[in-house]
Each structure stands twice: as C-alpha cells, then as structure tokens.
Length: 227
Image (cartoon, helix red, strand yellow):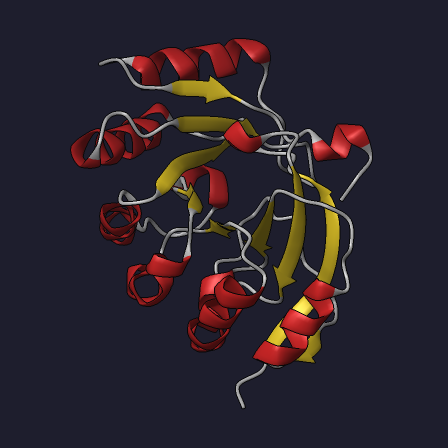
C-alpha cells in the first residue's frame, strides 16, 4: 500500500492569505524539489503513513477546526498517495481540503483537484526564489485551479523585480482577473532581505493595474508564536 512521507500533523491557525486566522488541521508533507532561496520549512525527518493510518491519526484530533491544510514541503509531489487517500478522507472525515502548493505540477493537480476545495497557489517569482522561471507550468496549473476557490501568493524580497511581478500579474489576468493576489513579504533570512513598506506599496500599485484584487498579507503565525 502506498505510504506518504509526513513530517508533522497538528492543529493551529492559518497564518497566510485570505484565510488568515481560521483554525486548521495541518498535514505537513515531507520534501519539495523546488528549494526556494528563502525557504524556512525544511524538516529533517518524517513518518510513513498509509491512507488508513493517516485517517486514523486525523480522527484522534478532537479539537474543532475549519478545514484540513495539506502543506509542505510540496503535497503534490506525493500525488499517488493523495489520489488514494483523499476519497477516503472526504467520505469519512467530511472536512474541507485546503491545498498549499508551489503551483508547478499541473498534471498532479489534475489528478486530485476534484477532492480539493481551496487552492493556495504560489507563483514562484524567479528573482525571489533564485530558481529558474516556471511561467508555463504556472499558467497550466492556474487554468485547472480556477474551478476552485483559488488565490495566488507571490512571495517578495528586496531582490524581486517589477518585470517578474508583471509576468505573474498577466498570467492571473489571462486566466481570471478576479482571482485574488496576495503579496507576501519574506521574513529576513540569511542573505534574503525583507522588503520595505515603500517597496511593497510600489509592488501593490503595479499589480493593481487593471483592477486586480491585491492584498499585502505578511506571515502572521510567526508573529503569533504558533506553527
């Protein structure tokens, strides 16, 4: 039976985006091949769970919560497991599924999108991540995700360029201009510098050209002192 690599399972408050402050059960999947320069979520170990084993673990959580957040790492790198587990979960636990994803695996999303309610999709800005552009993958991904409650998150740093933000903005505009865009300033980490308020205001004005639904939402769970 297919097993998932899970780093941790816990209940906390969503600290990012338009669902800020809601209580969720987080299932953190181990591993992500994208390796962004600013990544601060790199767990050193994991446990193996079968579909039934993960369901049993979730059912032990008696505290009330709004939805289950599949986070990482990158959950869609374990799509074989998700394709087997999500139907079981939806039948037995009956909670909304909130998928946090780097937005570069459209084929994987297509396999499981019918079981997902909310998609928190990154568009990986090359000047922010230090990685190669993945514009085509992001476009294909958002085309599939648009059938759900989806928002796009852009993590920005002092190194983020206007040209990259314009490309991201235009992808969203091409698919559906009403999709919310969340600007998320990175926390200072290593050589990565946190952008200033003036910088963020300029980014917001740039993304709002044409009537975009744009908000600046920093990571709040760190300020709250929770996971």
